[in-house]
Length: 423
Image (cartoon, rainbow, N blue to C red):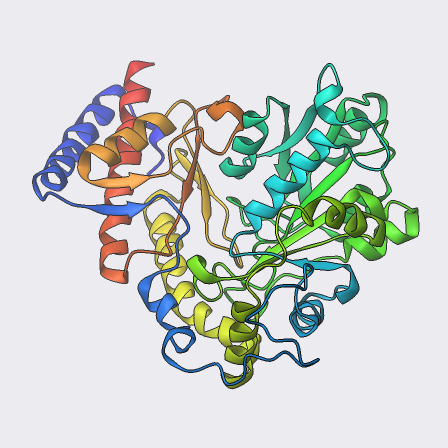
């Protein structure tokens, strides 16, 4: 059914039917949540051996006692393991705590307070700007807003950033200091950057000598299906163009093992690692090395990280399929909802009829379904078309998810019918 072709009378009848369904949901006292990309309890259970089984030895391969102080950059075997997993140089990795967001915020603060690449601290400049790909990750926007950094919205297309626009912005404005990227299975669209776009990010001319790419590869191995997407090697490309110092690469095990007790790391060029350590040495004598060993031993004893991620996919893929099949069933050719079908990650990005995202989220909330706030996927929480909503299918169990999607569909249709009748 195409909502846009319905007469006013047909829309009024449809609205009445939708309101009847909506009232029944409200009466049921539902408490459903699709607001954040949290692993479900079943996913967390996959790593319970971390909590229940001994770790064997607390000595690292070189004899280091993991219980004691030291090793600022992390254990060698930890760095080697993730370097092998992601195709990185182990010498250019610093292992952190459970959250890569912590490392990202620290990187921003270092540039803000101390500067980078021999340039002035950003805090000493009249204005600092960042490129923000939209729709994007609300926590990245929050970091920038916290520091008063001006955010410039640039569209995230099907194959990655609008590079024509980005190249134009960064070439002539030295106050534009960086960009946040979630390059594989982007939050929330599930986009994978094309090889050409990664190359252009590495090669582009920037007026700012200390321009930084925050390469948040949070979903680098979070494939839903066997035919997962592949990402170009940004460090290799930067070496070709002499721009190695512009990349901070972040990763964590937050959605691989347990978010509350995972490990993260930052990778960068050798000069940037030296720069990070120069300040980090006053923050900590070293992160949790016992946890680094425990996680390595866990993967060694459970078939490796690839086998572990396939277990996650077996839980997640049916949930994504359920949501996407329901959208196809309810909204194909409707004219009021479009969406992207991701091959990995944790989110499904949908676009409602223009001007209907806030109304849809509000209707869902009243019916007992919590979603990420409308506008959250844009800087300052302002979606210019009030249409984008981030759907997070991971946490609810299948039966709850089925109900949640049904509620969402009714609310989306009701918001669209109301909007069309207004117009």
